[in-house]
Image 1 (tube, rainbow, N blue to C red):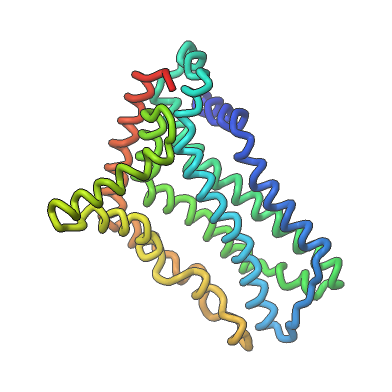
Image 2: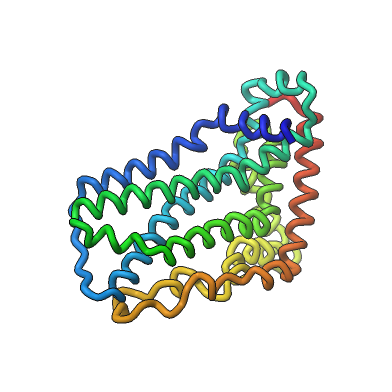
Length: 288
C-alpha cells in the first residue's frame, strides 16, 4: 500500500498541472466574482433556491468538463512522457514493478485527478459564496448557502467520479496502451486507428458495428448512470421558479441499474485487457 501511495505522490510531483489547472480555474472564477457586477433579481424563496442550484451546478460543470479533458490527456501522455525524458530507466532501476506503476497512473487519472477538481470546486464555491454575501450584503450570498443543495452536489460529484471511471475504463486502457507503445504523436495514434477501423468496416463490409460500439460507449453514459438529466431534474429553469424544485439529484441517480448493466462489465473486461497490454508494453519498451 505504501508503494502505491508514493507512486501516486510521484505523479503529483511530476505533473504539477494536476493541481495548477483547477487552482487557475478557481482563481479566475473568484476574481470574476470579486470584481464583476453582481445583480440577481430574486424575490421569493423558490427563486432563491432555483437560482442557487443553477449556480452551484454551473460551477461544478465547469470543473468537471476541464477535468475530463485533462484526465484524458494525462492517461494518453503518462507512459509516453517517461520514455521521452528517459526517466523510465531510473524508475525501472527501483524495486517497483511495472504493474504497480501502471496501476498507480491509472488510479491517478481516473480517481485522484477528479478528487482534486472536486475539492477545488467546493473551495471555489465557498469563496464565491462569501464574496457574494459581502458584496450584496447577504442577499446573493445566501442563495448559495443551502445545505440540501450542497449535499446533493457532493453526492453527484462522488457518483460521477465512480461511475465515469467504470464506464470509460476501455478508453482509459486504450489511452494507456497507446501511451506505452507510441514513439510520438500519441494523440494521432489514439484517434486514427479507431477512425480507420470504422471506415474499413464500412467500405468492405457495409456495416458500422465498430462505430456503433464507440458511439454507445462515448455517448451512452448518461442513459446508463442516470434516470434523467441531473441538471434538469434537480433544479427548475428560470421560467418556472415560483416554487422549490420538486426533483433532486437523489431522484436521478441510478446506481443499481448502472451496476446491473452488462455494458459496464463488458467495458471493464476490455479495459482490464488493455491495461494488461499497457503493463507488458512498459515492461518491454524504454525508448521514445
